[in-house]
Length: 571
Image 1 (cartoon, rainbow, N blue to C red):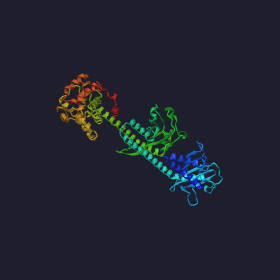
Image 2: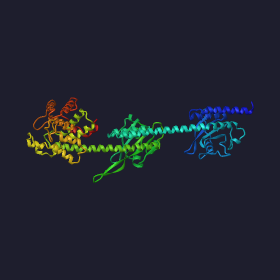
Image 3: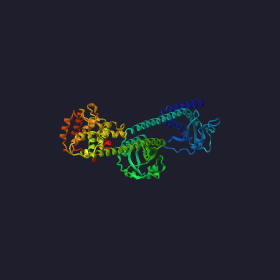
Image 4: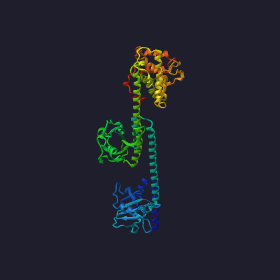
């Protein structure tokens, strides 16, 4: 075989080996097999691939192969050679400027696909060189010529693999963004489904843990004076830890620094290098904090004005923390932006929840005050009549299968049913003997008086259902009730419910002219009134509630049950 034929055979064999490498199904395998082939052809000690990063304009090592297995030291002049070959993203491939360079015993080859730099292959040669020169000017470098042929053959495949990997990375990133977006949308929907504060906070923390893939989350709230931070709840892996009630000075720890000083998000990927880290919470809970993403919670606050109305101002109400990425990676700006978006929505929902709680407490405080004032006007009833009627009415409504919304109306309307007695003479209400007809006519005015008081207060739209309870609770099915003589279906359901509850409480408590009846005696009286004065279904519902032990004689006094607590806990 001639020298020419031998060279051609070698070249064909090398190309076949390169073609086999090109069939690798992923970038990592392609690069490793390419470097193995380079080592085989050049008899080099080690080969490296440095990937080009367009963002920084530099090359970073990604793949290393050693002729003897194991690790290999990186070439000392790698950065110099990469910079020489790929200057500011432009390859030095102009005329008379080859792609292959060497420095000492290191040869470097730039991989360029359609003017797009891909990276640099570095080869540690067995024979040292002392000066920088072009390999093609050297004497006997047919092995490196074969290396150059192999790299040129594989460059398009590496380019395709890099593009495919980049596309897959973009797809994965987009999928993650889509997942986070779906979670965020679900979160915003979820927090609007409850006004109960503890449930709301738990929902917030669970979503934060899923969105950020962290081990734990915590929610801190400033007290009214802005002097202390209170740990309200901890989510994630902390759920299995017995968390103590923690309250710290507002300027303590990373959370305190963010809430009271920087008032902006803070990423701390190594808490032990941060001077603000407060380890006491870890010591008490047993949780180990490594990294923290901390954001302040901004929420609108309504400032009441001297006149009607007010203004909305934004203030910091506390802060939220995400602790320890599950995969051990650092928190990123993207994580921080997402957490800020979540906590801002959460803070608004939380403020709305607090405002609702405050308004509920205020509302029920006023209702209790009004109904108690009405009860005090009528000494013929034992203290707490309106409250007991409300408790009885709610049990009847529940037994009838009424909705939670309707039961809420029942609770309010029944509590206010005797409001009109504030407009009836104390002499008549305090009379210990039976009333004459004229006095009864005055008593019969109290449903209308209570109705008019609420309407004149501008509450007819807000208390539309409740007004029926106030004005109809003395109507009878046979039409002989008052104030309007309604009959049958003309009487609303809420009016029928409160009527039964009112009669039951009147019978089971002492009156000036008789002693309280027993439960059995009371039910017997109610049965006699069914279909004439009282609704049969409402009486049956009350009797079932008695059998189930939900209604007692006597019913609990007002101080034993709080209206607001019952409202908040009602199913």
